[in-house]
Amino acid sequence: MADVVLGAGVIGLHTAYYLAKTGRKVIVVDQNSADNNCSFGNAGYLSPSHFIPLATPGIVWQGLKWMLDNTSPFYIKPRLDGALMKWGYHFYKSANHKKVTENAPHLYNLLLLSRNLSIDLHRDLDTNYPFYTDGCLMLCTNNESVKHETDLAMLAKKDFGLDIPLLSNKELKEMDPLISQNVLGAAYYPIDCHLHPGQMMSILKDYLVKMGVQFYFNEKNISFEKKDHKISKIIGENISVNPENIIIAAGSWSGQVAASLGIDLPLQAGKGYSYTYKNQEKNIKYPAILVDHRVAMTPLGTDLRVGGTMEVAGLDLSISQNRIPPIINAANYYYDELSLYLPKPTEIWSGLRPLSPDGLPYIGKTKRFDNLFFGCGHAMIGISAAAATGLLLSQLISGQKTEIPVSAFDVNRF
Ligand SMILES: Cc1cc2nc3c(=O)[nH]c(=O)nc-3n(C[C@H](O)[C@H](O)[C@H](O)COP(=O)(O)OP(=O)(O)OC[C@H]3O[C@@H](n4cnc5c(N)ncnc54)[C@H](O)[C@@H]3O)c2cc1C
Image (tube, rainbow, N blue to C red):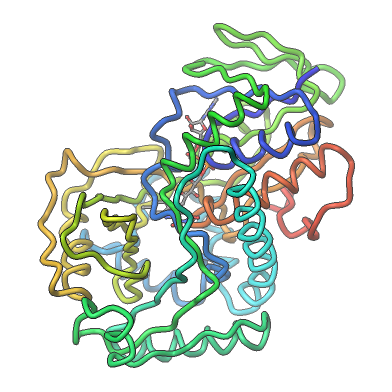
């Protein structure tokens, strides 16, 4: 019997990798060709620095203010939708200091484990992709965000022992002369890494095929049979399997799949955009988060990827054109010598981040079925946390002790 992973995004592929590594038979099934899901066009950061969840104190009121602004970086489209309201309720309940303080160490442990596993995995693969260990800059253009980043750096030092240099504009310009005078300062996370996510995804997929993992793509209408607290069969157009275990790694669609099995899993999609400038004559030297504008910039060899926005607007990949100029304008404000052009709307990539309400992913087994696991809800850290998620799921499935405690990621917590 095989373990069936539903979803060939970054979480599904890493889960398949760790399961196959322990000698298990693995099948991956995707409803699409899975060559342009959310795991492809993202910023490619592997960031232990992302230990603060999206739901932070202040975000609710900031979000309400931003709802009136159709160019804002964070937007929840108001809808009369029970699932959104339930998610919104839990998001609101999680957006406080106590919860953030509770959740940050769990996120950090997951992210640190994942960074180290990703380095090992990169070494294990027989074909390679560039893996950069240059760290990441959190660039600030006002005093408030400098203070916020300073506080975070102190917290990272106190709680996780991380040394985060705080840099002035002059020091930043020594690291990367393209950084503009508009930047007041930055926190620098040397521990962060980055890669080209699309390259990594296709190389990992090919490697899984060599490991014996079977793939079924474009299986649009997967259905399930249930028997005695188990999923006894998975049926698609080209597949009919009695799974030993099934792992739902269907990204932003995982809530829908859960609902089809009678499971209530609060999850919303957070749409983001990116554009990749090819063969830049001048390129930035370090990945950088433009803190005040919530934009991410990633140097990928001679290419430069710029991305941002978080639109909670359902399972909709359409491009909201008014949200693109603020992303590019921000990039030009922080790096004024780049003079980036505004791309055509048809050239923009969009992806749906799977958002749990509290910013912690779902990793583990449901109460409802004995052989049903979830690996989803990774929001802004799918690339950063994929390896650890895959390892933890494979350990849970094989009945081994998990590398780090997983109770915070409990699928049944809401
Ligand atoms: C602009 C932007 C920048 C980002 N930057 C970063 C970053 O720098 N670092 C980082 O860690 N994260 C980043 N993220 C987030 C990251 O991309 C996601 O967390 C991650 O890709 C989610 O992976 P996933 O495997 O859960 O989902 P996906 O990649 O969406 O994969 C899910 C797969 O499941 C399939 N599927 C859905 N429903 C079914 C079904 N019923 N049956 C079978 N298959 C199904 C889909 O077709 C899809 O292929 C960014 C996201 C965006 C939008």
